Image (cartoon, rainbow, N blue to C red; front, side, top):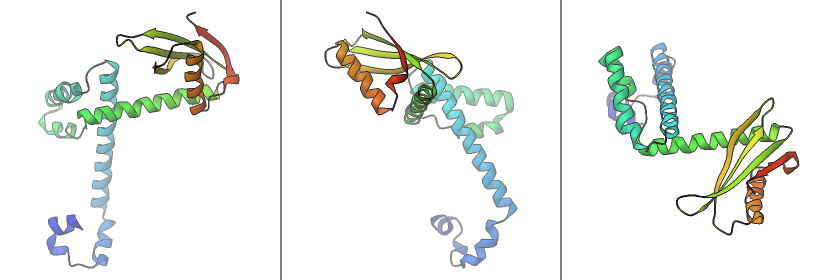
Length: 193
């Protein structure tokens, strides 16, 4: 209604039956489909750029301040100034990149958890070390995928209490319970001592 009143005020008094045939217009439908595909492509590009930004360990603002201007320059050089407008739809702000990284990490964790649940058995490697912030870090990795052995980081938690074997087990047990991972499929636990 706001769009109608601000952009097409001459039509705001029209009955709804006037607009119904317009909604089936081939021009309108092709425009909506084309816009939707462009938005999907821009969002996919945003996720891909975010993935590489995070994988490189760079600050989130690098996507907006360095990568995006490079993309615009490259597109202008390669395809002309008329194609640069399409790149402006790629969301790469600091907060967007932060949200995308969170989305990607949640998806990766869910994928790994599903693979562990589907596998006949898995093993874990537990390592506790002290980082630069003097917090003890718990690392748990390694599982068997359906047909081949895969090794991935499953969790990385800060241990705020004492780092006894019992405390480490309780953290892993809490994670396994929360994610419904069955201990009976665990065929091996490797520690550094």
